Image (cartoon, rainbow, N blue to C red):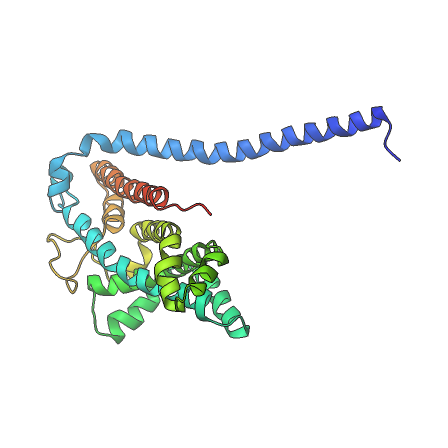
Length: 291
């Protein structure tokens, strides 16, 4: 039996009020984060834009704020990302392909999947301890860029595996079946059909994971990355520093001018992060396939 007209109107009116209230609550929560982010960005820009010049980009760190630069940290970060990216990409995408295309769906596969998901939530300092034990001391790499790259690759590996798995899952099974029907082997199907179609999601996940690696400090401090480097690394076995560590070093200095130098370093780091995120969006749109 249908509700009376007046009671139905009251019910609909109550639902609309609840919807509007929910909308305002969620909008307020989002606005708080946006306001805080904008406040931080404005503060950084005001403090650092006046110190951002060519000398800042080409000078090495100095005990005098006026002469301090980010050159060694910038090139250390470039070295770090250049080595971390292929290591993490090969291991992460290879793991995702195995789990999605080859592994049987049994308890062992579920065990691996659960542990990969759990690793994504492990504090980064734990990966630093692992890197110190395994790469710095166990493999004898010392406090080198290569040891840092291996450590950061382990840190972002769970993110890349999960993102790559989701990209592979999004490819319709009909494409695989069509390839098999034409006589393609499993590897030919994966290499020529599945991977090209899943490439936008895979690349996006990798670039976003590398964006996280750029901003990490704790693991690199654990493996012995230096806080003051007055040279540019020339090989993967050289000692190094990265921009987050250099910024942390400046902020910890008692001189007030170093706060502005640190703000300029934050602007450079943000510019690099935004460039990588823009690249991820471009690649996703360029290679996007609609099924």
